[in-house]
Image 1: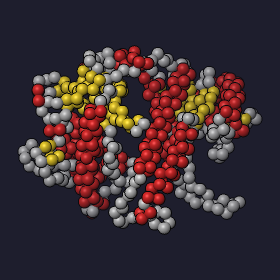
Image 2: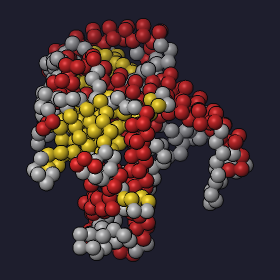
Image 3: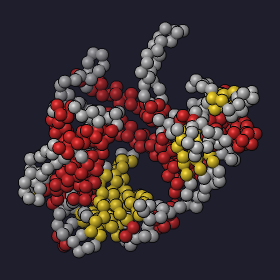
Image 4: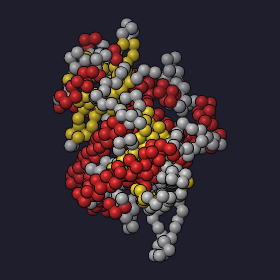
Length: 525
């Protein structure tokens, strides 16, 4: 399989062009909801069948769906008969592909508006992704519809037309002029109508972008137009999926193993020349506090304008159709909240990228425990009572911390960067118990979560996360048996680790004095 990567560039869009693009997004959103409504109704019908209720696994459900094709009125096949639809990825793809002939108004179909089969093919992927998530992700209980403004992407895959030329159906890409043309109707030739959008370069990354586009039109396989809400205004971008060697920015990997101990909010690192512990996405904390305050203001505003929709205990009324009266102030606060969340996501990703770039020079093999991060967010099932106070202890865990600091995203970004440079990121099983291992006497000792300092058998005390990273650095992950550590190498590197750890603790204490919001107190280091 050839290597592919995605290049995103901004588009220069005039006001009338933005209106036409927004209309296209809305048409696709309505189609998406139409398809989900039809599929949801059919799925509920299947749920009532005893044969379907007897299916215990998804494999059994897939076999049931293959044996029970269904029809939707007005969806005809090539033989003008009702089209067979099966409840799987390929069946839904075929169903959505037929919707180009669906009427928008009298005598006007979606195909007449320039919505081609390849655009519908991309839409079917979003439709199936929602069902795939419901089937496989136990956190997802239902399939939802897209609200106004929630569908912000459409695209086309390159295909061969009747004359044997490879084209993007519904769009034209001109890299020599740095322009993309989007078709607005279903006509061909001189009758076809297009809007032409200039593609802009980032002056800071012009060399990188030109290197990425050196393969020209033939190297581009997928063309996507993305819309994002930035400061209450839509910005438009083109995403090009390019086949070929990914351009580099002059970064190089170091030599040796690097152990990484990941937490809900922190990342500890131990390598040949580095021992460190840092907070992930530290700049997001202030934004999260502002989001929390703004969310409370929004809730108070909505309750004040819609008291008829709430019960006496403050819960929303159920079982009746509710009419919401949203004030202009409420709408303005919602826009402010959307902007804060966008800014938070951008800052979080940028900090992860900067942190990953800084680690590349420390080694060429990165070892991290394959932690079930999703389980960190799950509330405790067992109800416990505090012996001192007699009150029930909270069942909350690290849901908000994981959502705000996104440790899994950091690992994914680091993995992509390391592998693109020829290195390796190894995810080892948590059974290796890196935080419990004491190499001085080759033993394992369990520690409570609140124990942030660990004392080895030789009497030395270390910060728990940095010691775990040191252990992972020397884990012999190629062995078939678990818990195989290179104790000889650990003994040789131990003095260096102690020195670097003390320097890191001193650095972190100085940092904590400047930032009192840190989740790791200096006294715990």
